[in-house]
Image (cartoon, rainbow, N blue to C red; front, side, top):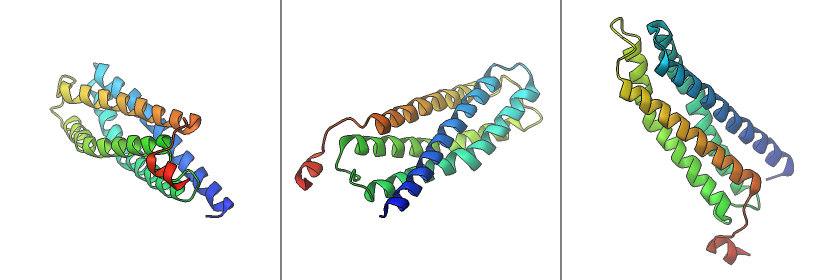
Length: 164
């Protein structure tokens, strides 16, 4: 991979990752607003908006950040499985993306429930709390992955040590 291609790919990867964190941060704020609001119209609009943001921004950014990270690692000296920090970051982001995809159905269900005329702010409160808790946990995990990428702790995997 040429240096300019690596830089372009890194730029795209970082932009997608930052976008994922930013969109998820907004999602957390909306989730809190939907959970604590006594106004049914606010709660209804929040959950419909959360579903739209999840499907059109968060999920695509998550998948593309994972894919660009994999491609980037394969085209750089860091490698995909040479250094523990890269391997851990891959596992963290892959798990976060998988959990996000598993939660997408519940987010869509909440949007459908919220859009019904019979919706009240007391409706599926367990689901609303679950969505918030998972979003906060997801944000914490993404920040952890960001720290790994910035600090790059030392340590070669056994494969990395053999390849040196």
